[in-house]
Image 1 (cartoon, protein in one colour):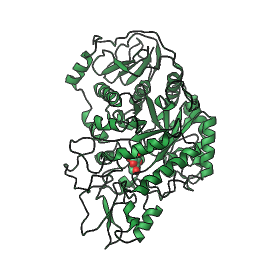
Image 2 (tube, protein in one colour):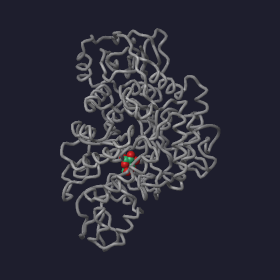
Image 3 (tube, protein in one colour):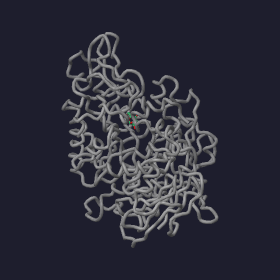
Image 4 (cartoon, protein in one colour):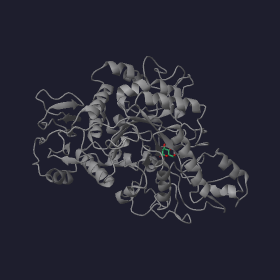
Length: 575
Ligand code: GLC
């Protein structure tokens, strides 16, 4: 488990999730009661069900972008996040690469995902493992070449898998040619105008970096300060500058012309800063998600111009999409990012911040759907910035149950590599830690390395089929019990559960309908149906078994009780 400091990091990535999750576990009787009584169905000791005829949705997966049949592919897609350096290493240097991803496309097809989202593979000094980009239109030799990228794209198509790349518009690396030119140029020069440079004896304002410490660093002892909301190696771009906007358009066209299907926008709530860079007047420790006063660093109105620009470019490439990492303080502001002329989708992160508590999960689902409105909702319980679900929820059973909840919901679902193997976080020794959020921290925070340990594919350590060399983060022996090869053979493995869930989600007619209808459920439980269909998902977060609603059981995250009841820490799909 992570220490308290995770909260500060979470501010940048998913809000104060960990802290909130830990502090709110446990019954919230009042809210639970009103929740259960708020539906027409009677609450009670069983979950109640109704049946309606199933529909006949046909998935639009891999249809040509021009196709008018059904919703766009991204509206219901299951997208698998490949953290490239941890996925598969083809050349034995201990770091995953594009050829490694290419070699495992068969696995991803077998798993049944519609698309992959690749973490950044651009040339980068790797201060933030690729989120510090020195050239957004090339590939770092560590990961391969542009030819490897094209080859991966072509192979992915053959496997029926679309490809989304990660764009990092808020900042560059300090090794980007623009920043290097800025450092060599004089204060007030045009070279410095693309970033936020300011003079003075003290930092220009009190802003804190998301990773810890002041958000300002001097380029040299007597020189100006520059702004970096993340690591010092990630200077923030000045989005008021025309060249910055033009360069992003060029980058988007570069990758769209190569054939990528979409872009994930890193820190989509960043980019624009409050006019005049005023001091942050909020309480120390307040996070972007939890307080009422605006954060001058994030979610400024000017950001929407950038998202309109992105949309303008993508609209010229039919079938392409943008999904934003959007972390803001209220749902109305969040919804602005997915207006019709802005991003197609945005992560809401509600579910990622929920404890394993039925009433809280239900509230998260309602909030996320309400915020999304007519836009497809995006569900995720894992990414490269947060502890794996097994660790966050406290057990594999709970993580498996939450996988079924997530995959039953309308909209699209984003999985994080290793989630399908039920990997727990690894408690790494200090000497192995690499995350800047750890390097810059006060020594209490553990950073995000624990969820980035490479995937065990098969065989023995130290590389477990991930690499023939030494993995960039040490893989524990316990990962040897969780290899993909072993799990493929085991019908009750977590991998088999995900495969079955994805297949049902794709093939079964009950998986349609964009709304959720709640059933009455005993305390600590929830059950919902996709409106207009027969699909019911039931979850038991309480400590005792409960009767299931009527219906044919399609899939459960653990065996049912002998009498057919749903055990604690378990979810079931019925139709
Ligand atoms: C996003 C990424 C995170 C990165 C940060 C700075 O939150 O998900 O990994 O550290 O942006 O680019």
